[in-house]
Figure 1 (cartoon, rainbow, N blue to C red):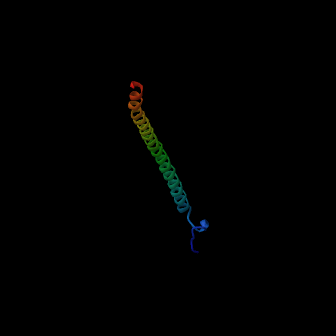
Figure 2 (cartoon, one colour):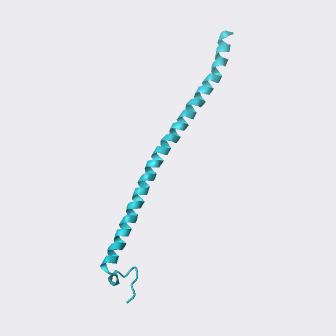
Figure 3 (cartoon, rainbow, N blue to C red):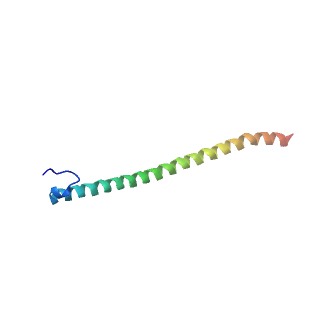
Length: 77
């Protein structure tokens, strides 16, 4: 009798248990990798959002400083 992957009756119980444990191990590894990726993404997005916020604030400050001398010139005249 030839053993196939779908015919578990032809396989010894030890082999079935090993296949099951391998699948559990793969699932656990995948979940762990997803968790690590999620943490990495969370930290990365914090840094990127902080950088965007700093750039926007700097842009606003630069725009304000550019307008400031013009306003002071108009007031002095």
